[in-house]
Length: 84
Image (tube, rainbow, N blue to C red; front, side, top):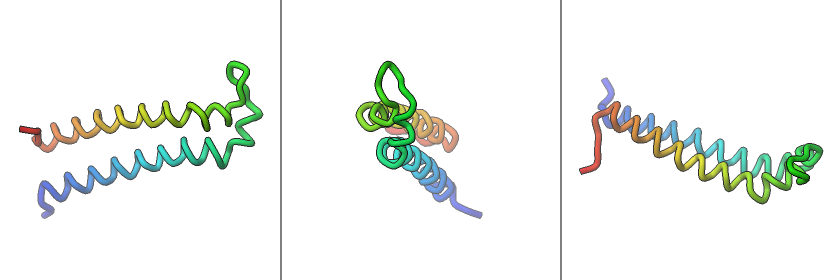
């Protein structure tokens, strides 16, 4: 049977991997790779690809930080781990 901390660490790495993948998709994927296709869509007069390259990836990063805090607090409660 796996140790409690090994399971915790695997779940932690799963969360990190998922959030880093989302960050990659928003910053590199939408901001660079798909920018030309997204530029056909306009929001507030600006092309969507330009918006993701300039601001959207930053907003996504801040949301990812808050999501990480929420998910890790939930994981800590699930495994009865807390900071002293």
